[in-house]
Length: 176
Image 1 (cartoon, rainbow, N blue to C red):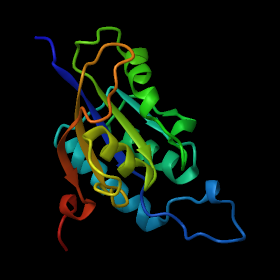
Image 2: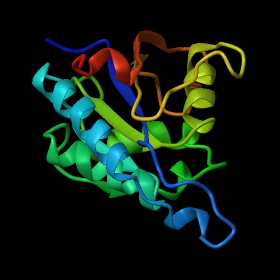
Image 3: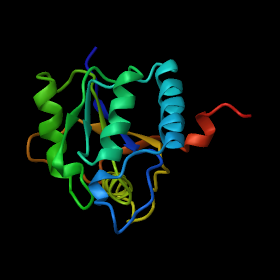
Image 4: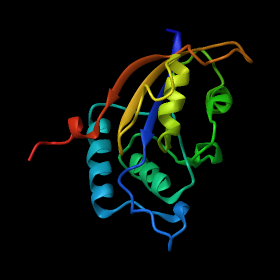
């Protein structure tokens, strides 16, 4: 049966090392606690059957490591890096191309997973939902799932999405 839309899964990187004037921001890595929390959240998501056809990540160390954990947890078969997901980037114009590069049939079910940073992912979600900037915020290792329509080439995606869920990592972690 043909799908009437496709899914966009947004994942904010996990807890990273603090900013420091002695370190390049792009090199900040996940902390041990950040890796453990991210792994727990993503293993829980995979255990609930969450999967993506394609996984793209910001090339910054903390996002790339989060993407690697997502791949290892079984959320996607491979990890690709995308400069448009770096802080300040704008992935919105690339979404249709990323989708069609991975899946030739525009009507086939498809889920794209993007790993990036705040406020960029929240701003992307708000634009897709037609909400004001700041209406959506992802916590570290937080997930949002948006449903998008299949639109003709060149048609605008902004304001066309529906929020399926927004999950704070705490809700997916076992209680002590």
